[in-house]
Image (cartoon, rainbow, N blue to C red; front, side):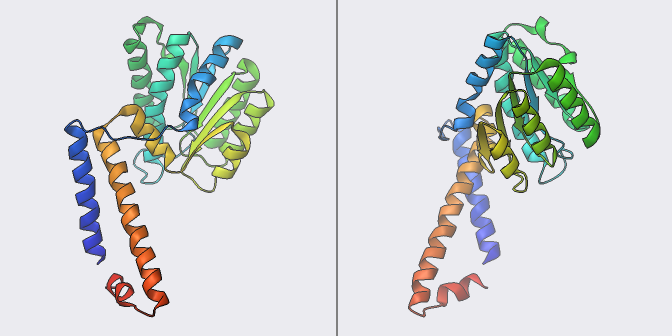
Length: 252
């Protein structure tokens, strides 16, 4: 039964990826945190201060649990950067992940090029500090010196989430957070104005990139969830009548 469900999952993913590539519109609901990004950029423009972005310490892109979060965050960074270019806002990206640096640099470079201002891009807007404690120390020092008007904390976070989040609150920054790490969600929820919870992070990244593979996999996953919920509901109802054939089938 597990093998059959695996085949069904692959079939759903392939179907919606194929439909996406054929031009079918795959709808993703508007996420409040994403809708708040122009507000965050506008606040920076009004106050004449920079915008801070970081994907968290995460690990590396090969990490099966943290890597996808970093990639989703970098996709969102492209959207943030284009908004910053249009508003004339300086963006400071703090990335402590070595193998993500080329992606961050290329994403920012592409955003400036897409907005017709390639000459304004500079590698100096990207700060790399290896190690969790040095990364945190550098961020806190930057907050006190530059006092960014808005901070974007989206990606794979560990204990730096509460440190950076609280530091942002101390300087009065408008904050947008997001992570799939359940052990860090409470700290970002407590310190940020808007939040991408769990799978919303991946949905946001897919909706920004409009990649048919990403959108198709999200759509297929949602359909699969409905199938599982249906099986659970039917199994529960049958179980009330002491009919256990569905439970026995799923145990195979």
